[in-house]
Amino acid sequence: MKKIFFIAAASVLSVTAMMAQQSVPSPTGQTDSLRNNGSAKVDTTSLVRVKSAAIPTGLRSTLKDKQYSGWEKGTLYQDPKTKGYILQFSTETAGTSKNPNWYKFDSKGKLIPEPKMKIN
Image 1 (spheres, rainbow, N blue to C red):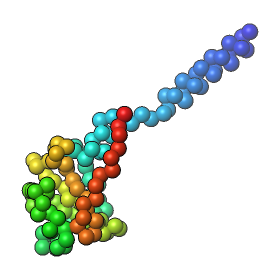
Image 2 (cartoon, rainbow, N blue to C red):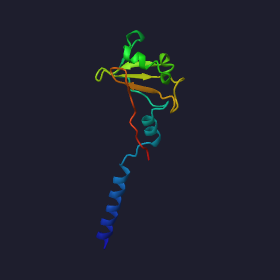
Image 3 (cartoon, rainbow, N blue to C red):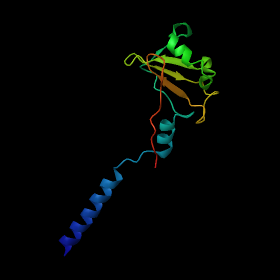
Image 4 (spheres, helix red, strand yellow):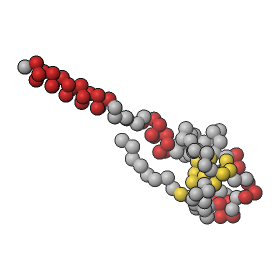
């Protein structure tokens, strides 16, 4: 009888320990990064900052759209691997779903849309 009780207790403890080790992502952090709002950050460690004079014509014409108004106050980076661009707005011009913190563009200056992800 003691052996059965010991085995049952050990099983319960092992299941409890296993469940405690599963990581649950923070809903706030996940939402912020997926929705690209003001608190989302772009990792710029592997990106190269682009000076205003070096912006290609295709991207420059895209940035004339009123959607990107105030882009001059932001920072433009180029990804050396993909040759694409990332425009990161300053915090005073970004922070809502209507004013995202950053935009991605391909090498020709065409906007790369954010994937539509449903968050439960």
